[in-house]
Length: 88
Image (cartoon, rainbow, N blue to C red):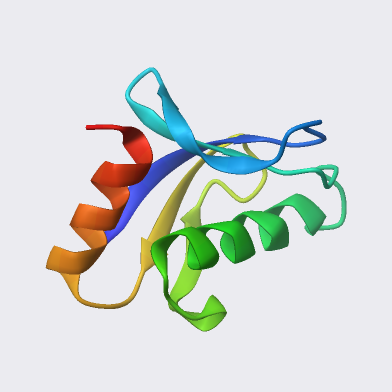
C-alpha cells in the first residue's frame, strides 16, 4: 500500500495521527538532517500500523516534508489502521 504523509520534524509532541490537507501527519522529535527524521517516520508508522520496521519505506520525497510511504502487509488491515489514524 502506498500513501502520502506530512512530516513535522523537531516536534515537541511526537505522534502519528490527524490530517492536514487530506494527508496523514507524522510528528517526530528528530531533526531533518542526516536522514534522522526519515528513520523516525518509518519507525513511528511501523509501530502505529502494527507492522515490522522493514515493512515501511519511503518511496519518494525523502528530502521533503511531504513523502510517499510504502507499507507491506495485508492491504485491507492496513487500510483500516490507516483510516483509524486519520480519523476517517
